[in-house]
Image: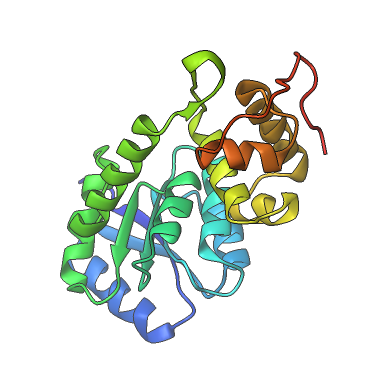
Length: 229
């Protein structure tokens, strides 16, 4: 007989955990090997049991996206799926950056969760249709809005550099960017340095003005001039 698919289920609402657990285990294909009520418990349980898939609530204490980041980093063979009420674009993008392969909205028929987890384990990404459309729009925006620099050229940034630049545009400093992207402040500064070098500008403020289509400054950076703080 095929061994059941092992699942870690993390949500701070006991009733939600019970409903999802019953729906999964009633199929005979799943075994919930760990239940957790917060991010710390989810990470500890995942490292201990090494389940096939982790189903994480975004808004549980300690932040489900932070848990997803740690689990994905420590257990690359474990799939991560978010279960949430949030339809916010930023939560979706943060979850995908954290390594999630699926994003399920609470309120769906619990009987469909098993099929979604099977698809993720088969290598598919499982996302609500409305959020798939938003993800496509985001990808198109990034492709069509390369940053114009000197002499009619355009700078191509990596996906993570775009993430950092967009957060800078919203007024986020190094500490907030670090928290949002679940990376160290040193890594944020490294991305900022690369952005400034590629855009040929001396400061974060100049990079934002360039992104907004303002006239480029007269002095372009020489290699090595990029900001490091």
